[in-house]
Amino acid sequence: MNIKSFTSLRGLACLAVVGTHVWTLFDLQRLITARYGVDSFQNKIAIFVDRTFNGQAAVEVFFVLSGCVLALSLMSGSAANKPSWVKTFYVKRFFRIYPALWLSIAANNEVARFKRRRPLRLITWRVLLIRDTRPR
Image (cartoon, rainbow, N blue to C red):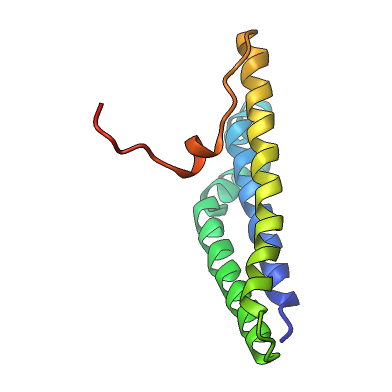
């Protein structure tokens, strides 16, 4: 099954989310208004972009399309009649997701340590996967 169009739409949704974050982070509408004035063409474009660039909708589109890609991937694996397609699928997912998770944890620890200028506790499996529900 061809999922290139889904992947392209996911990329556009991702760009819309990044664009919304940049627009909000740098408060571009205020900067454009301050530079060109309230009645300028540039300000009218800025107002249009501000009202139509919806990052939340783009996130929802991204997740819906990701679910479709995931389902199509699972269906193509089951159609191949391989006995271990589920195991192969989840092993691929594990090695796709967990390195990025640990890299982001390490980066966050380094940023926090740099900001605090003192060593931080390492985040362990127990903190990530097991919630201690015992009363204290």
